[in-house]
Image (tube, rainbow, N blue to C red; front, side, top):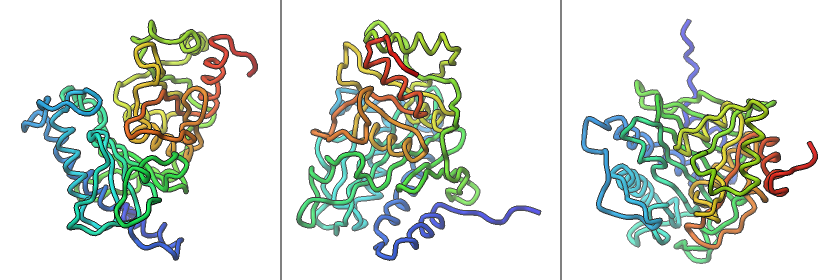
Amino acid sequence: MLDTHIVTLSRHVIEQERRHPEATGQFTNILFDLALAAKVIAREVNKAGIVDVIGRTDQVNVHGETVQKLDEYADLVILNAMDHTGNLCCMASEEHEEVIAIPERFPTGDYALMYDPLDGSSNIDVNVSIGTIFSIHRKVSEGPRGGLDDCLQVGRRQIAAGYVVYGSSTMLVYTSGAGVHGFTLDPSIGEFVLSHPKVTLPDPPNRIYSVNEAYAPQWSEGQRALVEHLKSEAYTGRYIGSLVSDFHRTLLRGGLFMYPADTRKPQGKLRLLYEAAPLAFVAEQAGGRASTGSMDIMDIEPTSLHQSTPLYMGSREMVDLAERFLAADGTPSGP
């Protein structure tokens, strides 16, 4: 007989909410609204090559990068889905230089949302998987309207984080501190359906590492030695060049993802608030780790909205190994 027991994202979140009698429903509604935005973005991503969504705009974002058409579209979709609901006190996006205020005509709520609307969008014209990353914090500032203090919070204060990957299927993965759960969009019913309950990184980890080795001449001696060690131990290299896709593979298969500092970007390239911290929360909840190479990503006190960081994440023992190589500048001791 056909299995009729379907757990949708809405059912799953509501069941989780019932475990917290003090819940107001705002957090639940935020996840519902993010899921709606993801469905709209997925619809447009799937039209790439059919309608005019591929290519660049004439805009440059705060990082000096040319904005892709789908970046702009995804950012507006999330803004329009979230700004009027009364659940958020403010937002911050990788595409905006400053905190995004909730318009005065709308009520505000108790949470702040940080997001990368479309990570890896430059790959859309070659049909590589891309994604959306999000992080939710509880409001800490005084008054009804949020501000910078609500966004510049240490990663360990996240109450939820996750990502959506737009690939052969659209999948939403999130954690609220009680494990990691993945939901795949069923287009026939228009719902995210629980497909990956209680995701954990494989233990022992698969012998896979992911890094862009084209930058090896700019790496530190420790980073180069680490990669040479992995090769000598018959590790397999896998690198897509789309952060959400590389992390998603690492989460499900195990291994180590790396985006190290180099001489061009000594503070790293990936953004702490919009990329590193939310994925670090997911990694930890799945039994893994995320590190700068010397400290946990989740312990960094952010000082600016667009702060960058080196990033090593995945299976715990492999992140530990990376830290030993980097600390010893290529000649680690111990197991």
